Length: 117
Length: 113
Figure 1 (cartoon, rainbow over the protein chains, first blue to last red):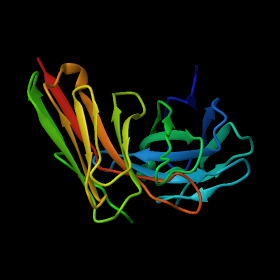
Figure 2: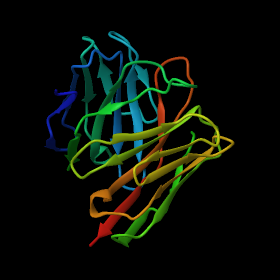
Figure 3: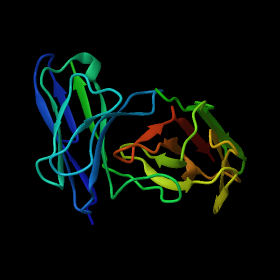
Figure 4: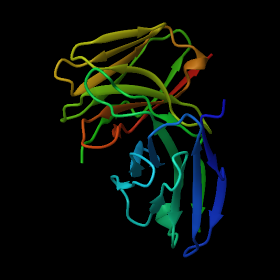
């Protein structure tokens, strides 16, 4: 009963280093999302995907890239990490389109805590 | 950018007290969700309200969606230590693709014995 799994849970990077965060879901969901959470700012959408092979920019996409090669996986990449990217990153998935009388539920992973020194 | 402002930002109360958390925006949302997040975990959905003026109850928690679908409130009766956590509201917007949510700034609640 895994749901949404994020790896790694913690990571410390030096400025300029690169890394990839992995999100995997076992619910056969079409939609997947990457958020960052910073104190006092709630969750902000970085990128999202509406299906395998598709990606789209969210509210704060700069400095990040994503890929959705397989339906169950959504990868978030930082090519050249900066201290401003120190944050907690959450991945979420949902089964379909929200709105009106059929709102959709997003299921979240436990997060990846990233520090960039 | 649509903004959802929550108030208060922090709330520390004694067990048994009542409290209300507010979520306000200048934008209209198709639905409004409330999540609770515990330390080291991701947010977990508590409730979704979809109709202006709608009221939903979940045990000691009462959720209301404003008539104009721009604001919402969460009222907790007789708070317990287990209610401690970060409460987030999130507005859903009808878009051409994706169930995109705009999250509020969060209310950190601590309930002490």
